[in-house]
Structures are given as structure tokens and as C-alpha cells.
Length: 240
Length: 300
Ligand SMILES: Nc1ncnc2c1ncn2[C@@H]1O[C@H](COP(=O)(O)OP(=O)(O)OP(=O)(O)O)[C@@H](O)[C@H]1O
Ligand SMILES: [Mg+2]
Image 1 (cartoon, rainbow over the protein chains, first blue to last red):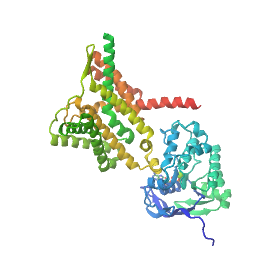
Image 2: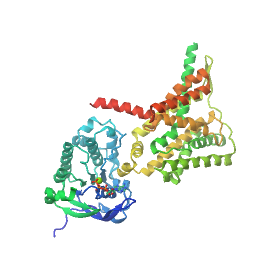
Image 3: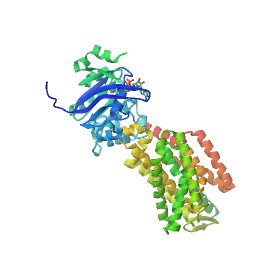
Image 4: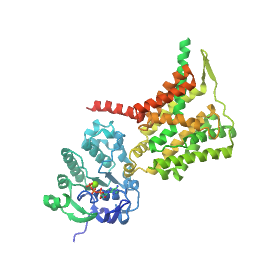
């Protein structure tokens, strides 16, 4: 067997977590190597968002452990994890409606350990529409625009890991494609590892290096690029 | 000549009424707008500010301006302790927070009564007064108007241009996302409650010379404070406090001057009811809608 050259940036081991009423995750294990785009697929309600929120620290781990960049973060608060370098784009995008676009971008500054002066230029290169809307309130943007703003915000201070929860949800196809192209460029830089939760075939097939398929709060299967590119296999893990 | 003096006096009265409403409401609106907590201990925090200023001024011989600054910090520190020990347990439970701050207000009022007795020696109103065309103008109220304007500018700067300001506004809108983006939201809450308390203390100290200093003096500020806050709304703390105190004063002042203070206050209450009816989310929400529409037109 070949020795692994890259290190695990994120390690989730036998994690049990959920809500007051019940556990949703029933012992999930995944690992992400540096620079990869790893996807999580599964039907509605299997616990994909719960997994992302647990990794972010918004839901407590009831058993199991999470390691990030070689450090145990299992019981750290969400703000601590963010400052370690985890960028998060929630399924509902989490744009602050009454902050301007610029202020929303500035909110990405507290992610990661460094407090760099923010690189607005590269944001405008990737998402030019943001430049004209800088002084508009975030809440006045369309769904797709909010998605791109949330991605730009999470990346503006160079996190090590990006958690992306269903970026295609409620977003028009042309923008989903744009996001796919952007993620490919991002992967080419090799600087950010991405955990992508998705159900959109095109996006999954465009960007994923491999995927975990979830079922009933567990990882049921691992999918290679070939599996992902096979519509039937993918459909078996996603469609109702 | 007559008209000159009348206009000047009207302007002065308008400024005085607006400054009184603004100062009364300031700490309350910061805590409500940024933390969604209706702080029923607001009047008692103002009372504490007045006491701190009186003690610093009378007992320790500090000049009044310094005593006012001391009051701000004293009540701000007290607010931080209150937040850390009690208030933080009630976030997201608005009714419980209401009851708890009411309890705090009772303890503070009665506690002050037990420790300091029914009243304190008054603070003399600093400065003299001018008279012009049969009207008199107090220097001290002119200073209070100036301080109110400076506070508006200072708070605008704080919330618009500092890192704390951005974090606080983000936390107010979506605490979970702010936390997930690296904001230590607990610290933001402590700072905000402390700031709101400190501002109540500052206002109490500033208004102390114009009032009797007693354990339950806070009550006289509570009604105007709540009216100003409700009319202003919590969409934007600063535009709410300014818009509401200016508008209410613009109604109260001329009627008060023509028909006496009592009818002026009645007019203020009626105006508040009408405004809340027209703008249920307050002046600040209406202002924001107008701004949005203008911006949208610019980008299209
Ligand atoms: N706040 C909550 N409280 C209680 N149960 C919840 C909560 N949020 C989600 N659940 C439940 O947890 C389970 C997993 O939900 P989750 O949101 O993780 O699914 P998902 O895979 O992200 O679904 P989708 O594809 O629809 O986004 C579901 O049965 C859901 O009803
Ligand atoms: Mg989900």
C-alpha cells in the first residue's frame, strides 16, 4: 500500500450528534485530505446538514471525536473552530440581511488565525457583481447572489477548510454552474479543502474528488469519481 | 424682536425636549436593539449613574464633568457584572428576561433606599443662564444638547466603523452565524449590555442636576424612555433614537409652549400612538425601507 503523502485536514470519528429529541448522526466517520473537494450526498433528511453543523461546532458531539489540522476540536465552541480556519456557508446562506454587502464580506475577517487586510480585489475578480452592490443591504440580494456572497465571505481570509452546505439549493442553474467553475479554480490553487454537501448531479460531477453517501445518519458508502460520474449509481444514493 | 426671541426660545425648548428624550432612552435602546432584551432596570441604572455622580461630586470633590465620566464607567462595570452573573442566562427568553430585569430594578431601588436613605443632597445645576426677550436659556441644557449630538456621532462611529460595532450588529441579526464566523458572541453580549448600562448611568448623571436625587428617581425617565424606544423601533438603534426623540419633541414643544406642559405631554402620547399605528416597526424601520428603495434605484 502506498503511504499517504498529504495529511488529513479533517477527521471525524464515530460521531454521534443531533437534536434534543433524538440523535441524527449515529456514528459518522469521514476524513478529508488537504486540497481535496469531498462531497457528502444523501436523501433529504439523512443528516447532511446535521453533520456540517456538528463539524462547525453548532451542535454538540455526544460521542466520537473531531480533529482539525492535527488538533482535537471535539468540544471547542464554534467561534473557536472558525478562528482555527474553518469557513462555513450554511444551507440558508446566513447572510446578515441588514448589513451591507461590504460588511457581510468584512465578517469573514474573523475566520482563520491571521487578521490580514482583506483581499477585496480577488473577491471582485471571482464575483464581479459584488462590486456594484457593495453598499446595498445583504437582504436585498437574490438567492444566488447571497450564495456567492456567503462563499466569498467564508473565503476572504483564507481558511484551511470550507464547509459548503448545498450551494445549489434555491439557486438558478446558470449560477450553480458559475459556482462549479469557481470551485474548480479554487481547487487548482490547492490552498483550501472543501467539504461539499450536494444533491445537484452536475455540480457534484464537476468538482468532487470523491464522496461519502449517507443513509439514516450513517456513512453507507464511499463513491469514487467513476461512481459519481455514473448517473445511475449517484441517483441510487440521492433520489427518493 | 418679539418673534426673534420666540423662535429662539422655541428652538431651545425643542432641543431641550429632544435631548431629554434621547438621553432617557439611550441605554434602553442599545440593549433592546442589540440584544432584544427589554431592560426594566433601565430607570434604576440611570438612578445609579445619578448617585455615582452625586457621591463623586459631593463626597470626593470631583469636578462635575469628571464625576459624570466616573458614573459612566461605574455603571458600565456594574452592567458587565450583571450580564455575566444573571442576564446571560435569559437570552432568547424574552419574557423571563423581562421579569428578571424587573426583579433587578426592585432590588436596586430598595437597596439604594436602605443604604442611602430616602434622598441625597442635590447637585447644583452647573453654569448660569442667559435671558433674551423675556425668555431664559440655561447654559447647562445647551451643553446637554451638545452632548446628545456628540453621543449620536460617537455611537454612529462605534457601530459603523469599529470591529466591535460590526460584530455586535452581526450578532444581533444572527448570533449563530456570527459565532460560526469566529465572533466571540458571549463577549459581544457582555460588552453591549455593559455599554447600554454605562450609557444609562451617563444619562442619569447628566440629568441628575435637573432632578431630585432619590432611590426611585429612575421612574420619571422610564416612561419617556419607553415611548421614545417604541416609536423609534429597534431596526437601527441610532436612527431610531434620534428620529423618535426629534419627532416627539417637534410635537411636544410647540403645544407645550402654547397650552402648557401638561397638554404638551398629552400631545406627545397621542403622537406616539399615531406614529406606532402608521409605522408599527418604528421610525427606524421606515427610514430603512426608504433607503433600500433609493439604493435599489441606483443599482438598476
Ligand atoms: N432543529 C432541529 N430540531 C430537531 N430535529 C431536526 C432539526 N433540524 C433537523 N432535524 C431533523 O434531523 C434530521 C436530519 O436533518 P438534516 O437537516 O441534517 O438533513 P439533510 O440531510 O441536510 O436534509 P436536506 O437535504 O433536506 O437539507 C431530519 O429528520 C430533520 O427532521
Ligand atoms: Mg441540509
